Image (cartoon, rainbow, N blue to C red; front, side, top):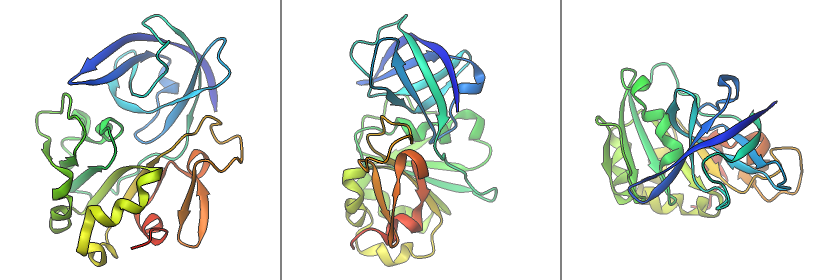
Length: 229
C-alpha cells in the first residue's frame, strides 16, 4: 500500500451527481473497482474513494465524500486497495448493472480506452450523468434482457441490497448458473482492510468475506451462492 499526498482539484456536478477531480501521483490511481482511503490532515476517519473516470493529473472520484472537502483540500491518500475488476480477454459484450444510487463506479469499464475491446450496455435507475457517446443505457428493470446478450456482467451493488439481486434477474435466476461476471459490493470500509469489525462482511457460498480486504469486487457466482433466491 502506498501513502502519499493529494488534493481536491475540482468539484464537479454532472446531471445531479457530484464527482471530484483528485490530483495525485499516477502510482496511486486505483484501477476500476479498487479504491483509495482519503482523509484530510486532521481527520480521524478516512473515506473510500472509487475511480469514476480518467483524468490526466490523477482521477475522477465517485461520490459520496465529506461535505467539508472543497477545491484545494489537502488529502492523505492510502492505496490503491482491494481487488478490482478483471475482465476476461475474450469479453465482447459487457453488461454494466448498477442497482444502487450511482453508476459512477462502473464507468471506468465504459471509458473510451475500453471501447475497442467490447460493446457495453448499462442498466441503471441512477442519474446517468455524462455517459460515453457509444454507451447505451436502459432502466434496471430491463437488466434481465441482458441474459440473452452479454457474455460478461459487471455489477455495482450496495451491501444491503445483495438479496435484491433476485429481483433484478427475476425468474431467470437459473439462467445465471453458468454466466461469468463480477460484483463490486459497495459497503462502508473506513479501515481499508486493516480491521476485522465485520461491517462490510459479504456472504459468498458457505463462508463470509470482507469487502475491504477480500473485495470489494467478487466473482458473480460466489456472490450468487450467498444470496437467498
